[in-house]
Image (tube, rainbow, N blue to C red; front, side, top):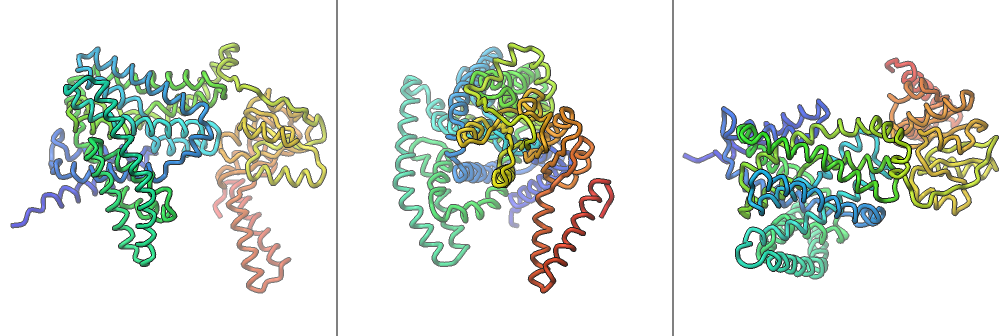
Length: 572
């Protein structure tokens, strides 16, 4: 009789992962929490069905390959370089300090020094996936704070790749001095990277382009999957990890003309196998191990939630960026994720870490993922406390050379945010000869605007001091174009408090923001998504033969219905 244990294990694992991921999303948690819970349910630590963990682990290795391949494929050096003055040195300092703390905790609890070091490395690395999701939920994507913390984590990714290159040498540390093993590992890694990026970057584009010309998507997917798995496996010949090999494969493919199609095709493969990876991680979760080592568990958890956050905050505050940016960096790094799992699993594979220590790290990671959104919700009260400590906040919030432009003092327009929407508004005002002043949170953009002759105040428009410098008390109008929900709300309330009579026009991300913005003092709220849909409708009617004026009239009627329904909380 045929053995279907592997198929049964995979089917149950994926089914439970789907349910767990869905449940996690319902309560606004990362699906990773649900995947870990699915693994725990079919693990030896819980009653009921026991999955074929060895088979799932083998498939999970493919998940690691596709995860790291995807990281390499989407690796954006430009994003890192745009905030390099803080992200690169900041990440280096933070990872070193957090690793030292984690290693110290391990040694204090009697772990061998190699295991303690891997523990420290594993808990020094935050998850880019978790961070981006949290930034989106908090309405921070697109801000300078988000750019800095994402750049910081990109730098962490690079450090992780170096760590993965060194782990095999630590695993064979008895075969010579450690420094010699590390140098040999880095040397092998450098040779591998050069071969893959020089030769691979020449061969892969030709190979993928040749296959793409056949017009067969099946062959194209087969070609890049074979390339990814082959390059990842070849890393083993250099004594390196498959995770490092997969990352380099992704970087090599990212420079090809077919990279966008590869990125689109790899997503379902990556997601399916990555889910199995997270389930395999959950299988190793063991509540009994956590209970037996509760002091070590608590020490690591407190280190991740508070010490890591404090290290990141203090490190970021040492650079000439805003205090809010330092707070966002601190909150963003108070969690663990996929790279922690990968470093830990590679450490186990090399015999550097026991399953018990890994299980404790996994439990800490799961809790940190659950609690991370709460960390972001504490930023406002923490900032309020720090602001009351005048000299302390002034040190944290220093910006280097801050623009001090001469702005109009009366009968002008205040434009808050100078992205695409703000720039269009400013251009129209310039053409009409209407004076205006800009408030911009991005320091680099503020300097560029002042250099171009556009009077721009750098700072957060939610603060009274910044708005007062714009002469808002005597302004003709205030236009708030920032895309972030929280920033728009705070700026609207602050502007209305300083000038009860000024007309305030606000950009909103969604219709649900219209009513609360009006209650805060906005006279008009514009939803770009609505306006785009209305313009498409109007153009469609014109091409269908309607009179342009009639089409405009219908468009305006639909606009009034939608905006009034949202403003008065009535269903359409």
